[in-house]
Image 1 (tube, rainbow, N blue to C red):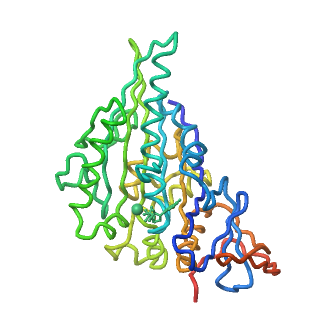
Image 2: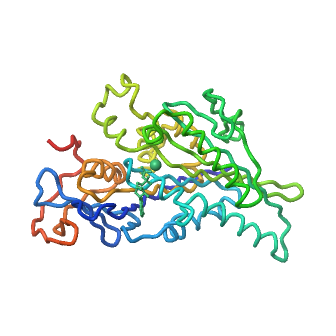
Image 3: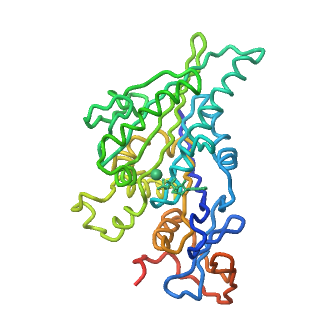
Length: 357
Ligand code: ADP
Ligand code: MG
């Protein structure tokens, strides 16, 4: 099969402030995000992305813009992955899962997938039959754990002769409609709770991955598409990783997969000949779903409050690694007041960042 390098699309979503009295340090305009420069608070740092969603953005908008256009690709045998990346508390789970009244990417994908299959199967000259199955796993401390049929063991990741990545022991359930999905997904999500003493601590350190397999067949032809929907571990782990540099390997607590994901996204987006998929479980699992002919979107979630400043700064630098950081003159914002700051500074290009002193 011919492989074409395909960039990972990186978009930003800033959640609304949760408490109206808190100081805000993130502002958005068009496809720019802006924060102050901790080295000189009279200056701002501005980052540009292919799309930036501010605090007024809706679940529907995120789905329609970033996710829905990719579903027909999965229905025609291609692979798609959607990640939510960002610090704990920035809205990853809200974006991916949402609430029953305000559903996120996962339930919307399931709904739209079945609606689209319905349309396709009922169109006049249809000769294809579609089926959808679903697996659910998490990667916690570099161990692959099945959430549908938890066994406690670390499942191996393999590659078949056609370079498809598979997890041989992973449970796979066929689903025919949204309710079937809900009935399996709900209880399976609780398996994350059972496995951990503190859910928050656990969920912020594990990657949860919904894998949908979409099979399209007619006599003598069969196409397999995959959709990965990923709620990544909190990126504040990544900060520790970055700071510790060479000591990374010595520390059992840091998140190797998240660090490797950064390297992989960077390598793909910079067109490097070798993509380091094998450096972690997450990137190995996603080897056939990021890069190659696959379609990937990373939704980078940010919290606007000033107390998240350093996580925001690190997350923006991670998300923007292959792009240039430009300086700007615009605003530093506190709730209810917008103060223009009239300073301009030429940014130093891609220096090694060490964090606030
Ligand atoms: P994460 O999964 O990144 O740790 P959560 O999704 O749990 O973060 O979000 C943290 C809090 O912020 C939750 O109370 C969540 O309901 C709220 N929240 C996140 N994003 C939004 C949003 N876009 N609109 C309203 N509330 C949000
Ligand atoms: Mg979460």
